[in-house]
Image (cartoon, rainbow, N blue to C red; front, top):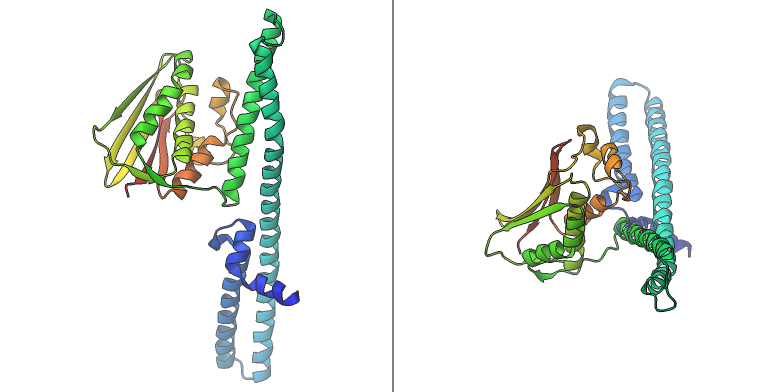
Length: 315
């Protein structure tokens, strides 16, 4: 049992997977690096002490003292990182469990609400219909939030599956535009799509990539001003597909732009126009694109609009 625990501690990659961290963020690797630094510092201390201190016992004492201090610092820092990593792992697991548990009652609530709205059980008055619609809208928003939290939990635990296959990104964009057409029309927003006639297929997970396009397009519609226009451009650049979604919406203040891909972050000026939203969409989009081997970015000016873009390699 003790032997297994020792082997487990030595297995740096296994420990990183346990905490859901990348190799360079892992406490065990940090401890190893600090150990190398301690050994180097000890050797340097010995060489310097041996040259400038006559008493050999004093040299040994200085070297041992420096080594002990550095080792204690290394242990304290590593333990602190381990506690943070463990807390992060437990938080991700808690969010995952709660999200899974909430999905079933929310699905049942949606089913019951749809049944009541249909009028198949009994006739529904206009006032009751109004209340049922409010109930349905709120349950849909909760279901969307739970879904986003579940995706974020999988991203943090490095368990978000990417099932790559050959797909046409052009078809995917056109399907997304078609699905959001009613929302865009209700928001008085016009969508324009420009693409090259012939476009190579790419290797990507169609569901995850569609989620990225959904999030970017949904944001563009939500934060567009009255009689807004969204321009979607799809190009082939240097053996990469390049997709940009440009709007003439509220834009992002310069002071907020560095936080835009962080979890739960929502710009102050956005809150004036749209109170709904979890602030997770862009974090999810960035994580999926980067895991797919691409890049994502944006340019924005407050009161003028925003352009969000991403690239994916053609393979």
